[in-house]
Length: 207
Image 1 (cartoon, rainbow, N blue to C red):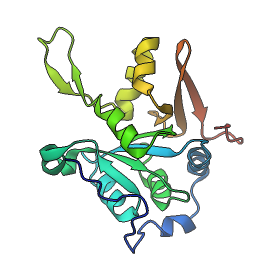
Image 2 (image 1 turned 60 degrees about the vertical axis):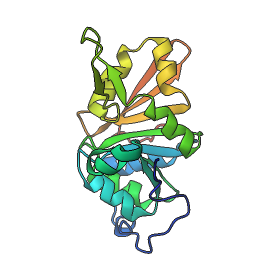
Image 3 (image 1 turned 90 degrees about the vertical axis):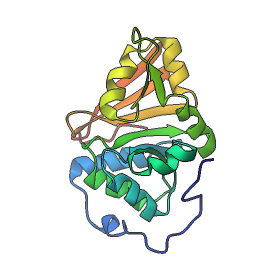
């Protein structure tokens, strides 16, 4: 049985990220923050505690809704190594903190969706395990929430695979190897629609 640690509307009393609301971001990070906060659909992230445990600790401290993608014993035993779905409120000190401190560190991926938190989590759980072709039906964990993996995987997908993977997701927003750029992926009628955005441009692209 899964446990939602911070349900919607829960309060922690201390929002540790508050100081980040007052400190100006460097210009490229400010543009990134503006892009992420101007999406027409609600903004989510899948953060990887195995990459850095602060991804989990900051989520716990934030008061935002978040939950492990693992269930049952795995959610408990692998708490410090699990991927976590996070939904950002507006405004979100956690998001600002992630933009300021974690962008470029491969902590996870951002995405937009009009789906409910439980439905989105259920969708992602379908992709936690992948089968290696020619590997004797060997199953492995699929770390799609690592931007280094997703930005390589999605361009290899067929249009049908793109539609299946996106499901209720409007767009994925990923860091590149260059922290001054942002990759945005959408699912189109003919397959994946990628967009490479510079965070150093004077104009902020439309969501």
